[in-house]
Image 1 (spheres, rainbow, N blue to C red):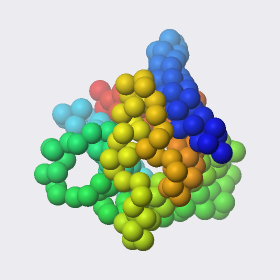
Image 2 (tube, helix red, strand yellow):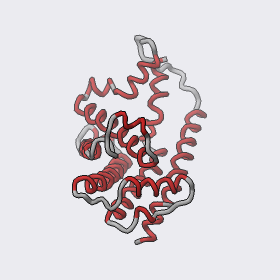
Image 3 (cartoon, rainbow, N blue to C red):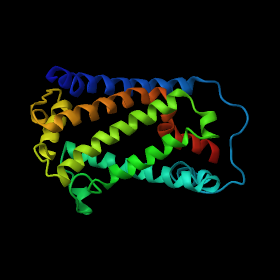
Length: 235
């Protein structure tokens, strides 16, 4: 079990990071090498400044809101949760005083962000079992949602167990020691092993690694390409 924990928390993390970076670069390079699409993709009538409307299209999903308000609500909530979770994970690497402009304990949202993320992902998963989404779905869609859902489940369990049930044998300082050891390429898992949290952490990191490795080769690349794609439609 200790060996498996080490493999997931160290070598697999490095492999996932490498696959994510190299895969993303490869996908972007492959897209740039494709022949230019001759017909215009531009939206009319024009609106200026184009860059501002492109950002609004990418982040606020006006077309989804217009045609499916319920789906829009869950997508916007999920995107907001992801943003807050990214900030929370950054705080696990090092103290960031500027984030404390909004005083909080790590993570932002006191665990409710994880619960909201879980609810949104569950909605998106169940939605794919009902037409018309079911007719357009492929196995990859279910796989990605399930992996992301499990990542959130085990991450939220660690946080809520520490806050609600005083399961505090592993806190921010221990996570920070482990993560910084990876950053400086002197990996050590001593700080995050030896408690019940280590089992949940291993599962959380395992599913996160799987998602990160699959990400560049999946539809999720829209997260990277949405802004430039909308710039093409607005310019």
